[in-house]
Image (tube, rainbow, N blue to C red; front, side, top):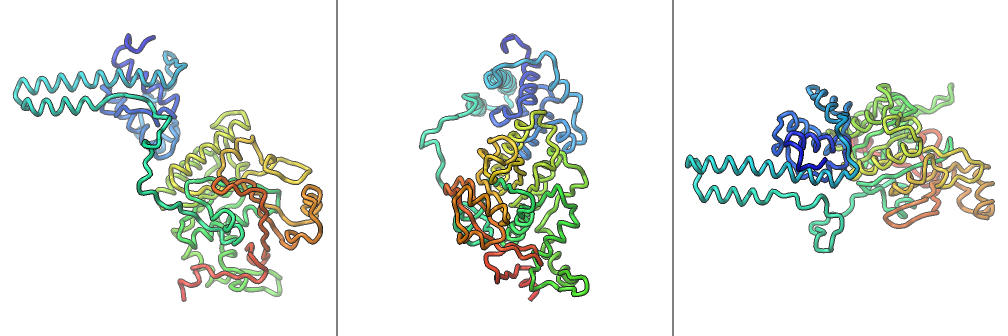
Amino acid sequence: MEISRRSREQIEDEFMALILNKNELLDLIQIKPKYLVKKENQVLLQQVIDCWKDLKIVDFTTMLQRNPSFDIDRFFELYTGTWFHSQCWEEQLKLSEEAIVKYYKEDIIKNLNEKLKTSEISYDEFMQKMKKLDEIQIVTLDKKVLSVSDIDTSNEEEIVRVKSNLYEFDGAIKGFALGQLSVWSGSNASAKSTYLNQIAIESINQGFNTLIYSGELVAKRLLKWITMQCAGKREMTYNKNKDYWYVSDETKSKIEKWLDSRLFIYNNTNGNKVKDILYSISECVKKNNVKVVILDNLMSMNLSSYGDNKYDVQSQFVQELSELAKKLDIHIHFVCHPRKVTSFLRKIDISGSADLTNIADNVFILHRVNNDFKIKTKEMFKWNDSNDIYKYSNVIEICKNRDFGVEDRFIGMYFEPESKRLLNSLDEFKYYKWKTSWE
């Protein structure tokens, strides 16, 4: 049925149904809530716009969380109405918008004419308002092709990057740029979580508040691990009787005070539904000026809200993470476990479809330098026993780096078992600011 043959109320409902069923259209709309004649549509549209702007998510659960007085009945009436069908989403949206603007202008003109007749406004005021009204128009949904003159290059700011403090690694990729997504993978015991926890500490030390989601460790245990890494071997105590290293209560207290309001840990006892996780992340980022987010790991998250197809679901989620990183100007580190393989682990073996690594700005694989690593690298790369890489305990492989094109680069690290730190050299020790702030 053509838009022109529908009533004003039907057109507005059509417009609302379009954006509720196809949320991406919210990036294109030019209609403001005041253009709509139905009060319930005005309220709902503003709520939907705000939700999409903040989270890039518009669904029943999220809307209800944000607005306890949310009009549930109106939402589902529009979302599930059997009268709604559309094959050409963008074309239908443009037709709806044009019709809504036409009605809105007619209302304003009628009102202005009444005011002119009763001398509430002068003729000059009338003409000024009419001229202003002409500026409201639906010219195009989206300017998808830009010429050089369309691109604003003024006031370009230098890209902000968070360093890893692994010297060779930072030399290769210059750090982790805000607005980007890094995918991490590796076999069991390759130190994925260990190194990402250390990146969290390094980020905080540079002034970047950090949020960690761990699907495997409860908050208390995760904090204990991070406290050990913050302390380092020199600030830890050795218990000879029980043969283990620990952080003293005094040192622990100093570290926790330093981390407070800088490190945030997702409470995974509340469940692992991905929509809830993303909502909480977005709220925490905005409220606490978080700039680094670590999600460890994909396999621990409930992605059922995205659908049933395993690979489509994972691709959709990673795409959403990439968009979230850009929207919130943060760097997201995301752990994906690899598929089970008998050969040397490669980028193509990372869990899910190739879309995961195509979407990401960086792709890294962590390897543990054990006998299996040595055998497989010798087979694949024809390395000999004297290769320097074998002197390390762990290795980061740079599989993809979008900014500088670095790939197939191996960066070695030394694991310090007492503190769980990964070091540039065997004798390295670094004091973090928790220590210097108390001296």
